[in-house]
Every structure is written in structure tokens, then in C-alpha cells.
Amino acid sequence: MAHAFLLFVLFPYIISTNIHACKQTKCRSLLSFASTLSSPPLNWTSIDCCRWKGITCDQDGWVTCLLLPSKGLKGGISPSLLGNLTYLTHLNLSHNSLYGSLETQFFLSLNQLEILDLSYNRLSGELPLSLPSSNIRTVDLSSNLFFGAIPSSFFQQASNLTSLNVSNNTFTGYVLSSICLHLSPSLRLLDFSSNVFSGNLAPGLGKCSKLQVFRAGHNNLSGLFPEDIYNVTKLEEIALPLNSLHGAISDKIVNLTNLAILDLSFNHFGGKLPLNLGKLSKLLMGNEDIDGEGMPSDDDMVDFDGFQNLRLLSLANSDLTGQMPVWLSQGQCQVGWGLFPRLFFINLSDNRISGEFPKQLCRLPRLLYEPIASQADKYEFELPIFLFSIKTGIQSFPWQKLSFYPPWIEVSNNSIVGEIPTEIGQLHLLRGLALGNNNFSGVIPNQISNLKNLEVLDFPMNHLSGIIPSSLASLNFLKEFNVPYNNLEGPIPTGTQLQSFNTSAFEGNPKLCGAPLPNKCRPNKDMDVDNKNNKDEGNGHHQLPWFYIFVALGFIIGFWGVCSSLVIKKTWSYAYFQFIDNLQDRLYVMITVALNRMKGRLRS
Image (cartoon, rainbow, N blue to C red; front, top):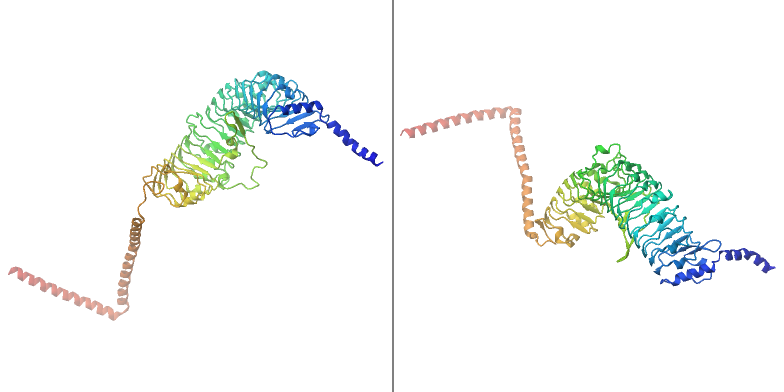
């Protein structure tokens, strides 16, 4: 009876186990696949392959997922290896060292495939004529060695495709903008960056109504910015750097209300960029041909809500003119919550900007203090970005992430004048301050020593004068210090890390002395004598006014003392005036006698 009850309890489990058990033909296919590759042991030892690591089966025991990323797999890939896995929906062999080509036969039996990720391998050759399945949703072939043109028929069956990434290969030909004409509007990501694509960006992107990310940077693209891209209102990122695109950016770009990242750097765009791109968090427009385009004035910014999400502003080498804009930190709130509440990286170098450095720029919130928890970006994180090179292997490219950019202000190689504002000492989070090759004058503010996180201080080729503040010795994280070709003088503060920098960091200041410069400062004795003389001279200047004050005070007291006594005491007054009369008579007699004697001598 007990055995019967136990059998009754375990019967569903036995049936379930048999149902989910791996098909033996699939088990042999997987073992054959593993045997052809050189890799660390996969520990595929149990009878049921559905329990193997990286393998998932459906309820009928058919293998549906083969997920082996970053397993150190090495070897060639051939159509016969996966030919029997006809129910496979997910195939991920990324971040391995697989080589070979993707022949058409490779996909013949994979007609259920939905996810294909072969990125970061050494696969090469041209792509097959078409993708294997109409169910395919994600294709990632990035960071391989594929070449040739992508055939237009490659996407004919991919009516449900949502993501295509073929970046970091050597594909040639045109970027297939027409892909949007043949696919469903569900496409959300297109990444053609870091290839050898050329020619114009043909119309067609406007048909991808749900497209969120479009990248085609680091190619040889030319022509105008595609006009129909302004119709894709779901776009969150447009990245087309390092091409030869030209023309103006249309005002229609304001239709892209979800745009967060716009990278058009190192092209030949011109004209004006509209200001009301409220969700923009990353703007890169460096090295553009914005022929003499001026920075927007404060009047242009009236009723402007600003770039509330902008973190990074890079307009370097864009031939900009005008003055440093005050509106970078202005706003309705007086405590500094300006138009750019999240901006922490500013690069306006290599332009023709003039005027003074605005004090208001020293109020940017993200350079003043860390945001409190309630103001921090919730649920925000960044994943690392890697690219594969045949020469160097897998490389990390952290500059693609916002977190790579430190709190920074760089306005080098412009025509900015005036003094460095002392308010700059409020930017406690600042890690880089580059003001070189301008026309700054005055002294280096002591307040810079408040920037305890500062790593780079770059002030070369200006007109700064005075001494190097000894308070800079407190900057313990300083890695780069440059003040050459100014008018600085006096000793370089000793006992600090300033002595660890090269002489080139101080050259061009004839009156500057001390290590690491070869010209030594004058002996301390002479300096003490000078200091003593200066002190005595200073004391003399301070004592001289007091001497005159006491003389005048004594005269006033004596004069009024005599007068008051004569008025009060009548007998003194009578005696005083009688004495004056007698003195007058005596003086008259003495003078008359003296004159008569002198006349007598002259006659004789």
C-alpha cells in the first residue's frame, strides 16, 4: 500500500521529467558542436541535455535556446553543427573566438530563430542573401570581420525585426535606409557605425516610425542630413560623427521631442542649431564648419526653458564667435538652478569666443555639489561598451559613456579677456580647468585651492601676473599643471608637488624662480633685508601722519589755554596787555637808537 501511494505521488514528476527530457538527436548535435570547438570544459555530462548549462528546452524536450556567451569558445563555425536544432529560437555565441563565414546553409534549418547574437568574434566573409526566419527580432553581428555590401534581400523575410547591429566591421556600399520600406514599423535600433559605408544617406528612415536609435558614425558618408529623419519622433539618439556630411540642420529637428543624444561632430554642418531640444543630455558638435556662428545672446534665451537634461556640451573647433554666454547658468531661480541643471562638462575650445569669463558660469549645480538622492536620476545606469580589433583583441571604449567625462570646463584657444573670477573656487566638484591661449590677466586666484578634486589646471599663454599662490599646495590630486608664457614672478611654492612637474610647465615666465626651474631665487638674507627695509619704510609712512596730528593738537591746546586764562582772570589780562605795551615801547626805543647809530657810522 505504501509503495502504491509513493508511486501515485511521484507519477506526475516522472511524467514531467520524461516530457521535458532532451531529444537524443539534439543531444548528439550539441555534443558534436562542443567537440569541434577548443574551449574550457562545458560540463555537459548529464544524460538530459536540457539540464546542461546554456541550454533551454521547451515542454516537449526540443532545444530552444543555446546561450554560450563569453565561454572561451574557439574554432570554426559550419552549417552542419547546428543543423538539427530546428526549434532553436535564441542563439547567443557572442564574446568568443569563433571564425569562419555565415553561409546560407547555416540558416536553412533555423527557421524559428528570433534572437541571433554572434557579436565579438572573428567571423568574416560576406553576409548570406537573407536572414533565416520571418520571426527574427534581434540581429547582432557587431565587432567581427565581415566585409562587402549588405544585400538588400538580407531583410526581405525579417518582417518582425526590431534591432540590427552590424557596427565595427568592414562593410562597404550604402547604408540601407530603404530597410524601413520593407520592414514592419517595429524597428527600434539601427547601428551601422565603424564600417566603410559611403555615399549619401538615402531617404527611407522616416518610415521607421518607432526607431529610437540610429548610429552610422565613423564611416565615409557624404551628402545632406536626411530630411525625412525629422519625422521619426520616437528617436532618442542620432550619432553620425566622423563622416563628411554637410548642410544645415533643419528647424524641424525640434519635432524630435524625445532626442537625448545628438552627436554630429567632425562633419561639415553649418547654420544654426535650434535651442529648444529639452530632453537632450549629450550634444557633440565639435569640428563643424559653423562659419562664424555666434553664441546665442542672453536676449535670445528669454522664455527659453533650457536643456534640462543636458550633461555634456562640446562645441570645440566650430568657428564660433561672440562672447561667453551668461545664460549657461542663468535662470529664474537665483540660487543657480539655471537653464542647464545637469550640465557638468563644457568644451568650447578652439573657437573665436571673446569677452570675459562669466561669473554666472560658476553656479552650475552639478559642479557645485553632488545631487541629493531625491534629485538623482533614478533607475539610470550604464553598460560598458567594447569593440573588437583583429590586432589588439577586445578593447573597451569608455568615452562612449557619459560617466567617462569628468566635471570639466575648457575654453582654451579663444580670445577671452579679463581676470579669472574668484567665484570659480565654488565649483568644488571640478576636476579640469583649461583656460590656455587666451588673454586672461590679473593674478591666479587663491580660491582655486578650494577645488580639492582638481586634477588638471591649464593656464598657458595668457597675461597672468603676480605669484603662484602657495595655497595650491593643498591640491593633492593635481596631475597636470601648466602656466608657461605668462608674466608670473617670485618663487615657485616649495615642499609641494609643483616641483614634480617638468620645467616646460613654468617656462616663459622670466621672473619666476625656484625648482624645477634652473634659475634659483635670491638668498634668503637679501630677501630678509629687503623685507626689513620695506617694513621700516612702511612703519615710517604709518608714523608720519601721527606726528603732525600731535603738533597740531598741542598748538590748539596751548593757544586756547592762554586765551581762556586771559578772559577769565582780569588781573592777568591787565598785566598781560601792560606787558605787551611796555614791550612795544622798549622795542621802539631799541630800534630807533640802533638806526641812529647806523646812520652816524655811515656819515663818518
